[in-house]
Image (cartoon, rainbow, N blue to C red; front, top):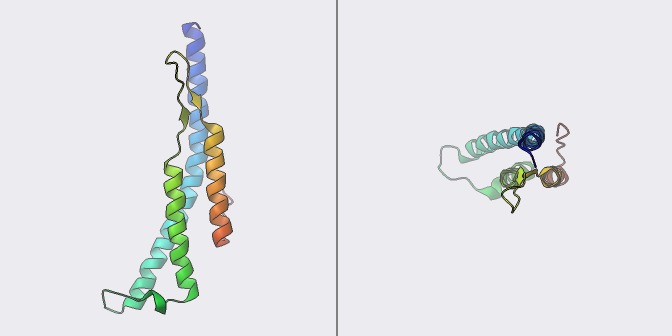
Length: 127
């Protein structure tokens, strides 16, 4: 393959990765927004229940408050899984151009969004 062809292929790959990154970042930001919302809610719940004590009892929480905790744990899992994604598929032959890992990234994002939506009933429709 000529240098000119390699350059075109590399530019094409960079464009694909950039577009994939923008889509991924939009969804990641949406999840992160829900994460911080739940984290703030938990801090308020703990402050309300602790009443000056260092400890508070989970048993005294309402079902809604327990669901906030469960949703936060789920959001941590979603963010963790999203952080593991690889945007580029490495070729074994160093002379070959790597590929954007579009399918795996999108499948992971969709799976994690669906898991969160089914578990919480909260829709993340901006992804």
